[in-house]
Length: 296
Ligand code: AMP
Image 1 (cartoon, rainbow, N blue to C red):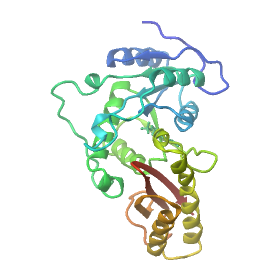
Image 2: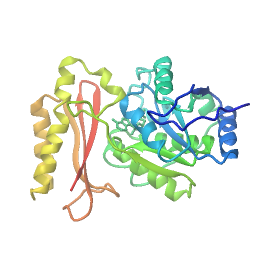
Image 3: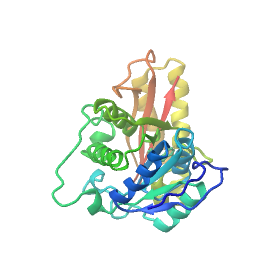
Image 4: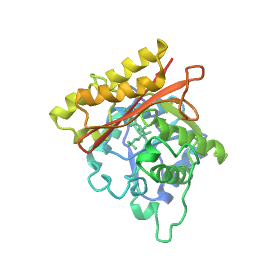
C-alpha cells in the first residue's frame, strides 16, 4: 500500500484526497507508513453528521500532528434502549466531502462488526466521573464511550486525539481513562463551537423544528446570566434552581440538570475557590441539548 505524502490537514494548506478505510488492518497500514516517515498522527473520533464543531477539531488537531484521521462510527454501545440510535443522522457521502474540503488525511469508517466482532465481552468503566449528570440520565453511556474510544486509540495507534469541550463530562472521563491506563496518547481539548445565536453546534440540532430552534437559542444566554451572577457572589444552589425555572419559562420542555461543578472532579461546587464549570442539559421534545460554560 502506498500513502500519499502531503501537507498536514489544515485549512488554507494545500489539500488532497481523503483516503477512506474500513478495517483495522487498512487503518494501521496507513498509520505505520506515516510513523515510518517519522510523522505524528492524530485522531478525531466522531459519530458523523459532521458540522463546523467537528471540523474545528480537525483544524485544531492539525496544529499538534502531521496527519489527521477522522473516525466516523455511530456507536451502539453508548445509546440506551430508548434513545435515538436508529434515528441518529447518517450522512456518509456528505461527511466524506466535508473531510475532503478541510484536508483530513484519512477517514476511518468501521462497521459494527469490525468494532464489536462476535464474542466481544470487554467493558471499560471510569469510576466516579461516569456517574452523576449525564451518567444518571443515561446509565451505561460513558462505559460505551470509554470502551469505543479505547478501541479507537488502540486500533489507530495515534499519538494524539482531540475531544470537544461541548461534551464536558465525556472529556473528563476520557482524560482520566488515558491517565489511568498510561496510554501514550496526548489528549487535546477543542473549545465549544456555536451557532451565531449561541447554540452549541450539534448533530442533534437537525431534530429541532423552527419553533424549538428559536427556543434553543436562549439556552446559552440563560447560562451566561447564571455565570455572571455566580461571579457576583450569588449562592450557587439558588442559581441552579433559578436557572432551571428560567429555562422552563423560555419554553424548554424539561431540564435534566443545571449544576455548578468542580471542573476536574465534576463534584458539586460549593464556591468558586477552585475552577468551576456550569453544566446543563435542557430538553425540547425528544432532543436533549448539552451546554456548559467556564466560571471565572
Ligand atoms: P459526536 O460526533 O457528537 O460524538 O462528537 C464528536 C466530537 O466532536 C466530540 O469530541 C465532541 O465533543 C465534539 N463536538 C461536537 N460538537 C461540538 C461543538 N459544538 N464544539 C466543539 N466540539 C464539538
